[in-house]
Image (cartoon, rainbow, N blue to C red; front, side, top):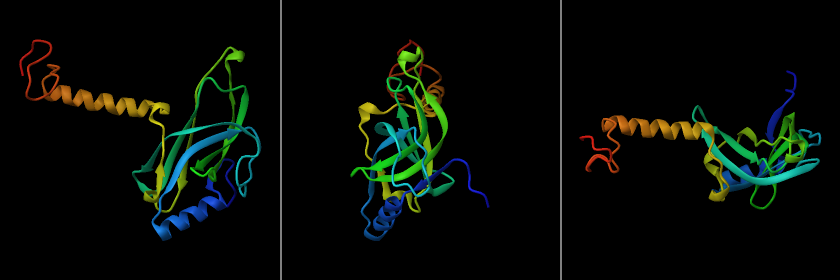
Length: 181
């Protein structure tokens, strides 16, 4: 079987932290992610040339496989002017938990007359995802398009329950737009 061109894997320290968490019941706290423009190898314990480090934006367990954890980090539009070839996710004690060989992507900066956010998503087999927690700063979280879409669909469902009358505290209130409930 050939090695895939791009991959995500736990570092040796990440594997040790998972084993310790399963044995002791003490959860692992993930806090940061980083990207770099170096060439990363499968046995790396961190990035070879870090260019940006920030907070992890979100994490979730995959519905179809509870041992798989999806992590997302966002490189903001204010950062850039470099290529991204590698990424890593870190525990609260700054240990590289997982590393990613990422497809080469140019991250522009404002001086290039272009700017864009770059989302880095990694899916990692952590054996027991309930042993990993995400510690985030809520002021630094970006809403994904999927999250916004889900919230709009929930709101649309509630509005259809009250006949679209836009009440402010369904079901026991008067309508805000003059309709009947």
